[in-house]
Structures are given as C-alpha cells and as structure tokens.
Figure 1 (cartoon, helix red, strand yellow):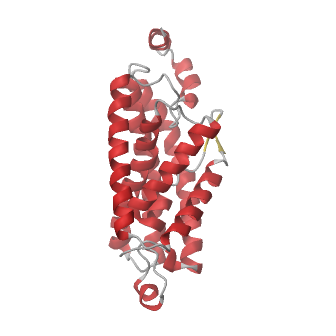
Figure 2 (figure 1 turned 135 degrees about the vertical axis):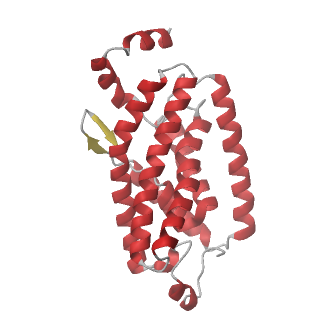
Figure 3 (figure 1 turned 90 degrees about the vertical axis):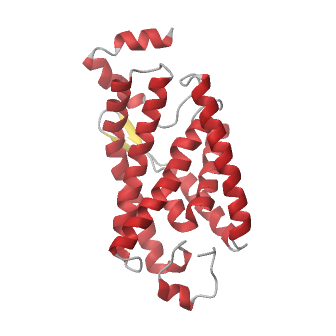
Length: 250
C-alpha cells in the first residue's frame, strides 16, 4: 500500500522536494524488502567477524582505549545536527575519521557499535534494517573512506598536514555521497521509492551534508595531527621513529 501511494504521488515536483528531506541514511523499519535486508545483514556480519579477527591478531592492547574514545566522540558528534536548506539537517557519520585514527578494521568495529547503540537506545534507524544501516554508513564509510583518504594522502605527501587535510576532506565527502547512492538503490530495489526520485533526493541533500562531514573531519584530524600525530593509524614517519607508544600495527 505504501509503495502504491508513494509511487503515484511522487510524479509531482512539489511533493518530490517535500519528501526529499525525509529520505535519510538511517533507514527505518519497513522501507527495505526481505532480500535486501538479508543480503546486507549477511555481508555486514561477515565483515564484522573478519574485522574482529583482524583486530585481535594485529592490534596492540593500547589501541583499545583509543577505540573507546573514538567511539564516544563519534557518538557524541552524531547527536549534533547542522541545518540544511529545505527543512532538514545533517550530522557527522565519522567513518573516515575513525578509519584515519584506527585503521579500517578497528574503525569499522567502532562505527558498528555506534550504530547499534543508536538503533537500540534512540530508535535512530530500524532494528530489522540494522545490517543495511551498518553496511551503508559504517562499513562503506570506513573502508571506502579510509582507502580513498590513504591514496590521496600518499599522492600529496603522507608526512604532510596538507595530505591529511585534502585526503580527509575528499574521502569524508565521498563516503557520505556514496552511502546516499547505495541507500537510494536499496530503497528503489525494495519498491519503496522510484530509483530516479530516490537518487535525486538522496544525492542532492547529501552532497551538502557531505560538506559538513568534511569540515568536521578535517578540523578534528588537523587538531590531532598538531597535538598527537602518533595517534594516527599511519602517523608521520618522524613521529613513528620517536614514539614508543604505537597503538596499532603499521
């Protein structure tokens, strides 16, 4: 019934821009069909299990406190919404930030914990679609964001603040936009919203939201780079050589 109503009404341009702000990355229950829920849940569980094994095998115990601090920061930062024209708002996702500090494996675990707590305690995203929300915002944002950030940083200069700033800005913005596109495709395949409408609505808003994501990520990483560069997953070489407190395997 919901599919029929939405499909018939979205032909109106006015309604398109009215409903657009409500198409968010935190998908509620009832918006995805069973095959999409099953596939995203299986993929998410598989990647989380692999991440747990990699973290246990590769990371030192000193990485655990940093994971806790990073999870607390991302969770708190996601509670702060910044306004977007059109009556909606955006907030930090934090996947690229977590990846830059913890690496993709530990970062993905941090993001998973954040989204589970949000879903269970604050009803921010449905329980039946928790696997899809973790996949879209946590795993894609962390893995994709980290490796794009790493590639750009290496191209500009891994030991330069400029490389971190440019890499983090581009990667964090892209992680939001790509997550929005994937979410739109899932909604369309589930028959909730036509693909053209979902893609237009999701990307138009999240292109702007991604700018906020980039700004917050750059400010946070720049501050840490100036004060404690050794906390980065890939710290500058001069810091790696001088510090005796590595938090992860490089």
